[in-house]
Structure formats: structure tokens, C-alpha cells
Length: 363
Length: 218
Image 1 (cartoon, each protein chain N blue to C red):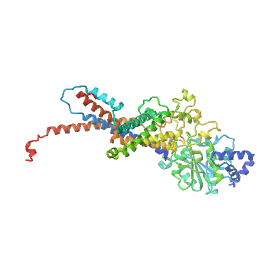
Image 2: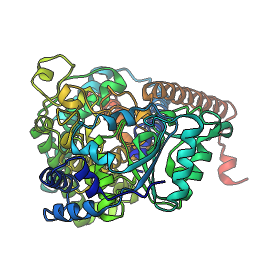
Image 3: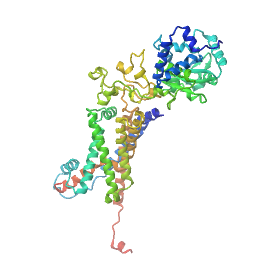
Image 4: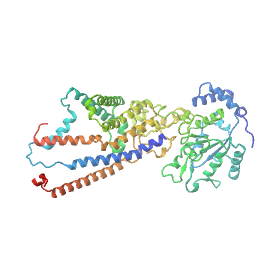
């Protein structure tokens, strides 16, 4: 396998000007909330960076994460930087198939043992020996454990790999789990979202190339630079929330005037992601700008958190039926206890003995 | 774990709290009503119903003549209760919850008004607690249940206000804490003096009815 050249050489070959490269570095520095001077440092480090080998494993997933990445407003530098890594195995994108494909993966794993980045999208089914998802006859669990051994770090791309996602939703028939439930001895970075924002994927890779380490992570293993704030924090409709102006339906006067979508089920206040700032489709917009509330796709268990169209204060489970049953039980208990009380009173009255002078005298 | 905790308090936690609250309240209130009163053999000198209903109303809305010391407790108490009711029933987020559970809804009050009622309620509660510490008679009469019920009523107000203004913690954490504090209140309410949220009207009706039967103008 060919030793990977530096990023600088590859950029020159492809005719990328230093000016546009520096603009990209400045954008990355801004996006990751690094100090202004660090754009130079990123540029210096990236030019010298060797293209790391990347192995991308797709498990129980819908390919939406790969779709998201391939639509990273090409042909900008963001997609080019992805060319700048050596994507040695990605069974959706690669030309090879069958034994050839599996051979490419094994060769890369041997040649760059301890150095390659392992990207995973999709959850890993564990029920019934993991038979619900196999590649070339091998279970996802087997493939992940093998590939994780030689990985420098693992990037869990998308909510399925990061938290279990849709396959993990109740009743989770395949026993789907996240990468971090299986691999415990490697640094794991979770880039959650269904799908994640492409610039966030490339941003994390750029950070890794620049600093040789993973960025600062939050409690759920997500890069703080992108998941540090909620959608609600940076939403352009936030003033409407503060003023108590809520759209009641998707086509009422309020909705047309850009009022807050909280009552229509927006999960923005509890969802950490960069949609409101980084945006989608080349910066064209994000779901709330299209008039739909946030569904909270970058948070764990978002499929099980009640309807996407129920407001946050609404219960995530059926409380009304529980309350009705409870009222019947409580009332039934009261009637039963009262009947017992009454019976006891009547019994006491029947068996009551009159007090006599003799009793008082103690005779 | 914040998200999963929030999911739990919005789902299973709320179901448990609602079940305990409804079972407890239904049992205690119905049991109280079924106890009844011994039938009076005297001739009625007035109506039980009119006396009962009148007292329920008058005790709720009319300030009785009060000594200077009693006045503070009554006024601060009224302010707390009013603030609490308005905040609970007229904040749009609470109406969203009630609509989801009960299926009924009504217009919300503006956020600025709710801010004021919440702060008023919080301030009145703090003043009442301080008064409970300072006043020797109140202090002597208070037991652990008075402080427990104060705390359980205070926490939803405090966490709710912090949530509206996003003070101190992230929205997810504050929402979880707020719902959790309400669930604690719901679970404990039927078995402490917080049960007065329902029993107070029954008690007032009994008082009024007894007086009404005797023909007392109360």
C-alpha cells in the first residue's frame, strides 16, 4: 500500500490556491470556536499532515450519514479535505466489491495498525448472536471488535453509532447498541445527528489532522465546539419564544410570521447541535427556517421521547389512562374501607354493654 | 445522562407520580366524605346547603378582621396562593401540559405577568418562612411537616422560574429538575397537610353546613 503523501502536496496537485486554503482554515477555526490566531496554526499543521488512513464501517444504518457527507456543499474545500484523507474502505462509496473490498480493509488495517481512524455509522445488533446485520458473512460486532483493536481513535458518525438511534428505539428487536457500549479502551468521538451536519464531520477530521488529538468533548462524547449550545440558544425565532408568541398550527398567521414552534413540538430547547449556526445545504437553512420544529435528532433516545409534534411539557407517556385507573383504584379503596368502618361501628353498637354502677365501683 | 433522565421524568416518573397522587387523593377525599356526620334529630333552623356553600365562598375571598400579627400571615399567604395559581394555570407551557393530559385549554397570560406572579409567590413564601422562624408562637407550633411542605411547594416555583429565565443550568437540566420537583410534590401531597388543596373546601362546607343547620348567620 502506497505511503500517504502530505495534505499540502495533494492540495497543490489539485490546484487549490493557498488563499482558499487559508480561508478554509479560518472557517474551521471559527466553527470550532478556537482563538483567531489558530487559523495559521491549523494551516501550518494541515499542510504538513500526512493523510491518515480511514476505515469506514457501516452497520445497522440507512446510509443517510454517508448521503449527508457526500452532499457537503461540493465542490468546496470541505469535500476536498475528505479527499485528503485516505478512505481505504467504505463499502457504499468504494468501487471494489466482494472479496476485493474486504481485502482492501484488511490490508489497510495491517499497514496502518495503531494509526488509522475508524469511522462507524450505524448501530450494532447484539441479539441472537448479532445475525441481524452481517457483512461478508461476519457480524457487525465481530467486524467492529477487530477493526477497533488497531484504531488510533473511533469516530461514531450519526445517532445510530453514537447512541443506538432508530434501531435502538423501543422495543429494540435486534438488541441494537452504540459503538461506545462495545468499545471501552479507545478514544471515541460521537458526531450525533440523523444525519449529522457534514461540516461537523469534516471539522472534527480537520481538528484531528491539525492537533493529532480529538477535540474537547461533552458528557456524551460530542465535540463541544458543535454541540455546546442548544438549537434554542441560537435560534432566530428565540425572541418570539421570549415574547410568548407561539404558532398554534403549521399554517396559521403565527406560523406565517415566523413565530416560535415550541407548541408544535419543537425540541430545540433540549437539543444540542450546530444546525442553527452552521446550517444545511451550503448554509441555505435549517429545519426551523423551513417551518418545522426541531425533532431532537442529535440526542439519545429521541425516537422514544414522545411524538415529534407534542410540545416539550406534554408527557412522554400515557398519563391520562394511568390517572383514570388510579382514580378508580383510590375511590374503590375508599368505598371498601368506609364499608368496613361502618360494619365495625354497627358491630360495636350491637355488642355494646351498658355501663352499670357496679362497673364503676369496680365490682 | 440528562436526556435519558428527562425522558424518564416526562414518562415513567410522571406516570408514577400521577398514580400515587390520584390514588392517594381519591382515597382520602372520598373516605372523608363517606365518614359523614351523625344525623341530627333537632329541627333544622336553616339550610345546610346554603350555609355550606356560603362559607366555602366567604372563607376563600373575604379577609376576616385580623389582628396586626395575623394580618401578615393572611396577606402573605393569599399572595403566595394567588401567585401560585396564576403561574400554574396561566403559563402557556402549563396549559400545553394540561391540554395534553386533560384535553382542555384556555388562553395564556403574557410572560411578563407570569414573571411577576412567580416572583411574588416566591417572595411571599420566603417571607412566610422567615416569619415562621422569627415568630415564637409559629415556631413552637411548627413541626417537620411544615418545613417539608414549604420546601416541596417552593422547589417547583424556584426551578420553574429558573427554567423560564434559563438561570444557572442548561434548559435540559432545569426542565428535568422542575418536573422532578413537581413529581415529588404530587407524591407527597395526599399524605401531608398539602392535601388541603382539596380538603379545605370540604372542611369549609362542613363548618358552614353545621352553622346553616343551626340557623347561624356565618
